[in-house]
Image: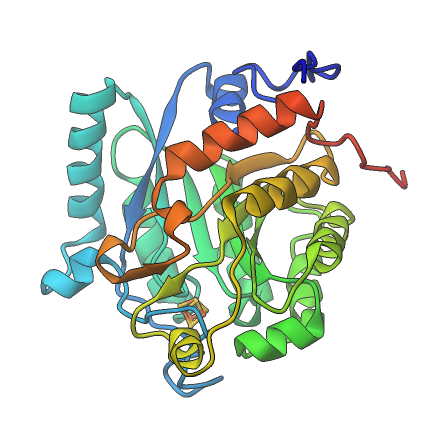
Length: 320
Ligand code: SF4
């Protein structure tokens, strides 16, 4: 079958992808490549310390960053300087974002949060913050703090949602409700903090209709970015223990690619796609085998999108 030419190209998608990729976003806003440096600032998670739960989400291995597994954590400044040196050497990078990634990065008192974020922003060439967190740890005080930084820096909050279906949040053991997620989104109204929502594709009990409903739900939010993760079976997780007792089917790569393309078609074309598949976890990775090779997944997605004239926003209907 002949491969069709894409019929849609949005002016924001300057890197030539059929979606608004993160590189395009940085080019548009900083006229340069910007690299996110992952930080483990020593936070914990309310879904593990007993505040919301002790088991964690069913797919979470609970180990935290590799750095944490190696011993006492270096300071935020040290972690950023190490990351900067690496990206400078490998990519000739000059601008960086401090990405507070490990566990729940708003889960501390407001003074401690200010101290950590200010430490990151004081490091030379840091142009922004990206803070991964759970909606149930957000408060007006945290929003006010980040709104203050967002007047000068590019500030993103990354909320884990994973699925817009209450029964899925229950099955995952997220320890928060959809209502709490919605309330945390509402807290950001009127600020210039950018919201990125995380979703998982491939939860074993979700079919394509459920996945696409999550996409439609996210498309209806005041969202600036989305991260899509593939569902992975990892050693030491509750869901892998279930799988060992009673194996269940996992998505094939072709199915995953089709779901991702359909997900993107339902999102507004201005939403930045920060991730398209999960990566890492090499030492505890179990399945699905195809997910080990991120590059191949992206190549298959590219082919699928060309073949089916699939692009971000193709099925998005704005209510504005
Ligand atoms: S919220 Fe994040 S860190 Fe906490 S248990 Fe779930 S996946 Fe793990």
